[in-house]
Image 1 (cartoon, one colour):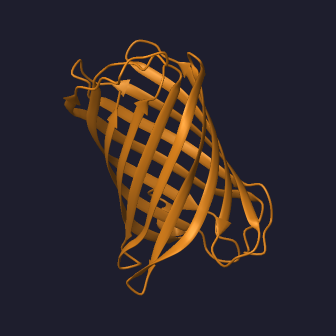
Image 2 (image 1 turned 45 degrees about the vertical axis):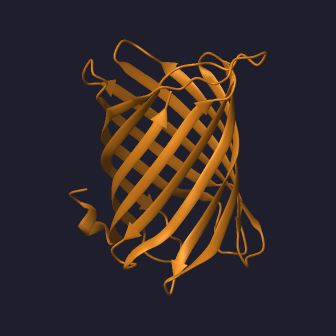
Length: 228
């Protein structure tokens, strides 16, 4: 970061707000939803909001398979316009969980379609995340690094190859617990409390922009989550 001004990149300050929830449908099936709003200094405020949803199946104790989608809208001339739809396949794997720590791998494939643009973009995303428990009360240091690669060329001008990287560090704190008990039955729906957590951190995003200078975003990320 100290040498970034010498790299001739276009830098921007942004704020991302996120709300996410996850719940067990049955013992092996989970449902997930996330809403996010993004604000950028160079774009004069709110420039994008999106919704992501999915169903996951815990194939084994350390592995979960997800299938879902995402809808993104952009703000142009103070109006909301549809921008992108994604079909998402994801594989989460718990690599290691020593006391007080957790290392998780996330591999995601995205099928991306853009409004008024022919062609489909296929993208591969690989993320490694490490959590460190800071206290018995549940405060946690959250870190992750992610690389994204386009798998094909499109008429939209997106070339195959390296797309962007993201590096993040933040802290997560539990603020409440909610009693939750699904109706029991043959499905074996579990009962258990949900934890409400607030998280704040810094995300650095490097974007590979072909035929023009690369972009670097300095992002303050604030999120609220409700999970088992």
